[in-house]
Length: 425
Ligand SMILES: *Cc1c(COP(=O)(O)O)cnc(C)c1O
Image 1 (spheres, helix red, strand yellow):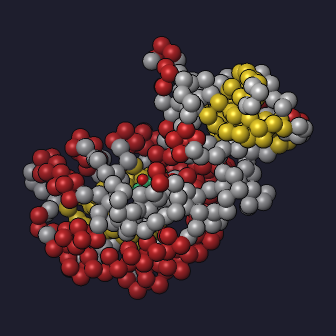
Image 2 (cartoon, helix red, strand yellow; image 1 turned 60 degrees about the vertical axis):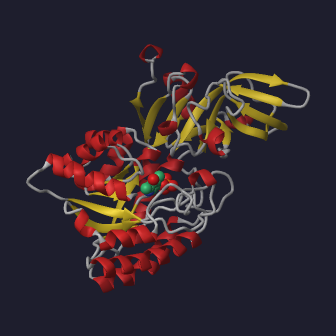
Image 3 (spheres, protein in one colour; image 1 turned 180 degrees about the horizontal axis):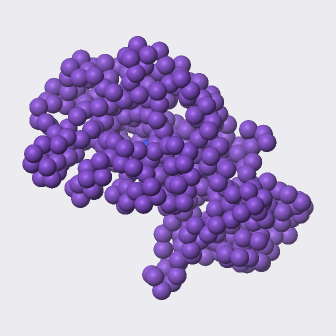
């Protein structure tokens, strides 16, 4: 298998689109449409490549579970030995149920609520990644309320390094004008006022500058700023931090992008941090990849409802909608669309809009795309690279029940979430 093929776990075999060794048309027959299908081996592969690339560094990986929070998927990652990066109390509950111990959880997010903090403290999570000074005050207050005798919790301060990640504005998070993280001046103010939070152990600094990053240069720039922020924080506070979290954000190929390979990314991380870590005697490096692990591990299957031909426009109305997959409507993002019957891949094409049934013009998976004129009612299609921010962003808009999810491993397949029933709405 070629490393450069992002869809290596979704090959055509004998003209039919497969996930590993399972014919995707059979899954539509069995479980209906629209349907999310994931490859177990596709989740494992990037984790193994990351582990290999980071060898020698004292590191820990935390999967950003907002990208895909199906408990059965989380179990794959638990088995692979990694932790989870949470952004809500709901995610913590799911991760806990999937078997993650608190020690393998870090909790990020700008608006943590008191009850979420309380639950996380009780669950003894590894640390909170704190994004504001009032959040520190709230964590302090919750700890005082819960444990009058005095128990502490670890936090890392999320530093906003003010770098441009050169990605879609909705998924850039490390610019000064973004809501995320603390500015350097705030971090230094905290360093000088540690006494205000006796229940908090300041254990690390973290960054996460954005998602779907296609070059390493913004990360390198952020790492440089992070190192100088660590030095200043330690100098002002007298503390020694025991971990540095580099965030996630590495991009994947949806269309023809050329994101850095996992190997190139790891090499850069090694180059930037190995010596630094050694000199300090074992500070840990944390990573929080989401999309990199889940993005190309899933597809969304759908069936053509109608072809709608107009003089200047052809619409292919499919049975999946923006409630099932929001990314194209929200970010204008691109997903490859391929037929389950590979024999219809070729032939005459026409400029086509692939749209869903929801009552929004933005309910559109492709606009003016050259697609075969032969595609017709009943044909099965796959939207590729839907493993990240696919199901996890789904909703019930238009009172549509959310789709089922199936996990494939070699020849076997498992229903890992039943299709939602209209009655449950
Ligand atoms: C979303 C998020 C990530 C993961 O982002 P990806 O682009 O999916 O890798 C990592 N860290 C934090 C704090 C996040 O919010």
